[in-house]
Length: 101
Image 1 (cartoon, rainbow, N blue to C red):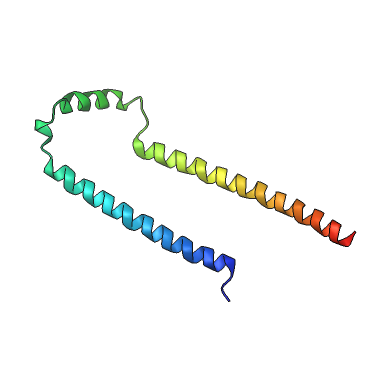
Image 2 (cartoon, one colour; image 1 turned 90 degrees about the vertical axis):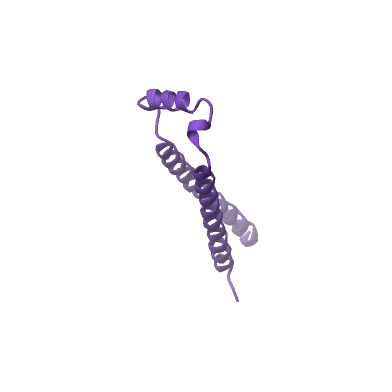
């Protein structure tokens, strides 16, 4: 019989694979779309590029923002898991006391 952990692992594997496939499709689509656009014909592109260059020294890079926020999310999930496990442990203790008492 398949355990809950095994079912969760299987579902998780399928979900992560789907997210990766979707991500690959989105990146491919954006790459194809941007190859079709002639940026010299898009209004304000030069102004935007100059602004981004000027502010670039003061603003974090997008990859840095993503890394920092995902690291924070991981820490929050670990903290939430730990609290939940401790609460479940306390609930189980009380249930056992009631059964024994």
